[in-house]
Length: 155
Image 1 (cartoon, rainbow, N blue to C red):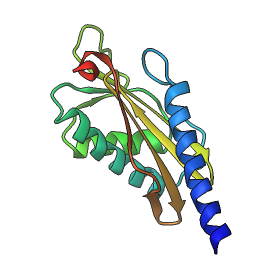
Image 2 (image 1 turned 30 degrees about the vertical axis):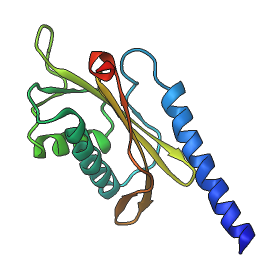
Image 3 (image 1 turned 45 degrees about the vertical axis):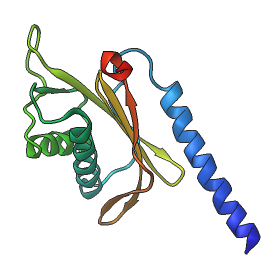
Image 4 (image 1 turned 90 degrees about the horizontal axis):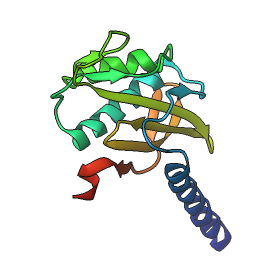
């Protein structure tokens, strides 16, 4: 029993360290590159998009400027766009936005430790969370990691 407890604690610590390392090493100035390398179903894409947009709304508040969605994954892109619209955000995808006030949003979903690591990134904030996939959707498997950027992060 003691060995199982130690193994579970070690596993949890390793997952947490890997997530924190990913937050530190994968981001440079600007946005991440939108990419989905994990196998998703439409149910899991919808569940992840709905949860992550809800967490994004908590961080950036109600949509005052349109969201410029960067990325064109066949499953997650439309799910994310629909979730953003459900939360009241205006979304532009391939329209010309030069000179317009928009908030660019990028995403990535990568397989990791039997689940998927999901990131949403704007110029002000980056959200990261692990999910466990199932036949009926996706369930959060970690706390939300929030990284603030820019002048707002300093205050």
